[in-house]
Length: 137
Image 1 (cartoon, rainbow, N blue to C red):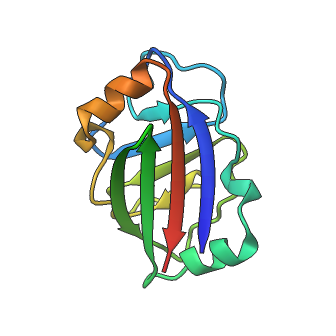
Image 2: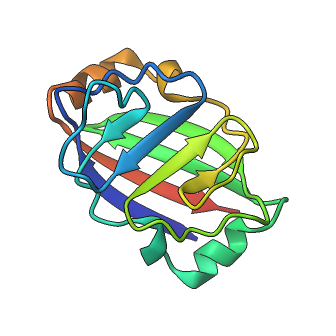
């Protein structure tokens, strides 16, 4: 079961955060947003399919985030959590910790923004388009 989100890079993408990465539907990004990879996301967690959400609410669920920027691809695997709500109407966050709020789409992620390929991040800082595919098993 998959959810696909399209977003756009921004000149202020630095991706230096060491415990999360985020996509937002906001149209802008300040330099303080060091976990944000892309803006203008065309979908938000509150719009995800109910079946996808239910599958992610299992502590045994494996969630994979595939980030594709012009053929440069990164994959981050994490897991689900019973407290995931997918209710946020603005942004989605993958976390290396077990912290959960309404923006969280994955916990125990194996990588954060700072761990991602710098070529991919440089392309996003140049305004490249990003396709994020979230898959749950």
